[in-house]
Image 1 (cartoon, rainbow, N blue to C red):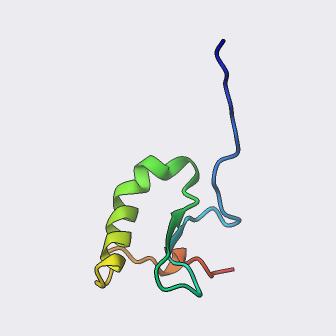
Image 2 (image 1 turned 90 degrees about the horizontal axis):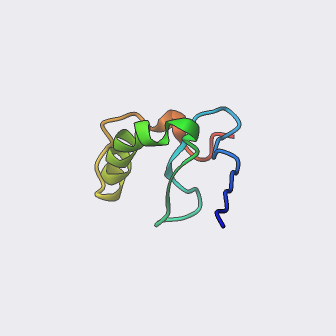
Length: 70
C-alpha cells in the first residue's frame, strides 16, 4: 500500500525567508521559510550562512531576512 502526505509550505508572514542568527543565542543559525524557492535559493543561502559561521561578512545582504524582523 502506498501512502501520500502533503503539508503546508514553510513560509513566513511576509514571504521572505529567515536567514541568520537566532536572537538570544550564540550558536544557532536559521535558514528557513523559503517556500517554493528553497532549491533555487539554497546556494545563496548556504553561502551566506557559511560566511556567518566563519566570521566573515556575507557577500549576500541578509539584513532584510533577519529572524527578528517582526
